[in-house]
Image 1 (cartoon, rainbow, N blue to C red):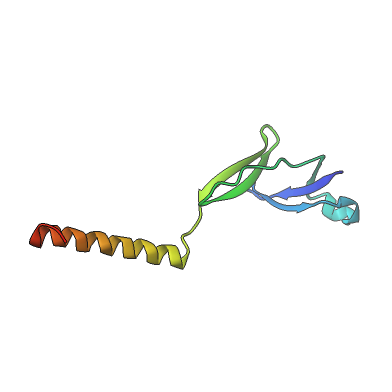
Image 2 (image 1 turned 90 degrees about the horizontal axis):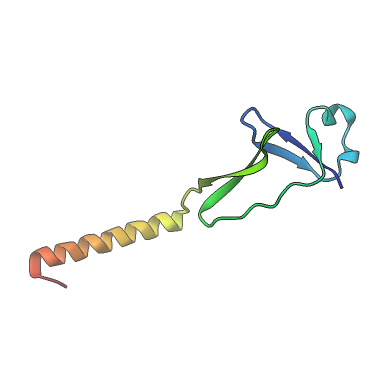
Length: 95
């Protein structure tokens, strides 16, 4: 089974189609065909970007994902708890 894909100017795979025979010929001219695309590991807290270069083939690049509102709030709560604990130690020798 062939897979059609295109890459942008940064070599990021920005489009994949698993039934390239259904695509118009002029669209097929804008990309490449391959027999398969590898499955890459998912890493918690990261976003995987699939890239392609003729010399390297397909490869993943991982970037940090943005924190959710809940994660931001939890970080703030944890920071405040640490500040209160530090103040307690400074004022009274503990809580």
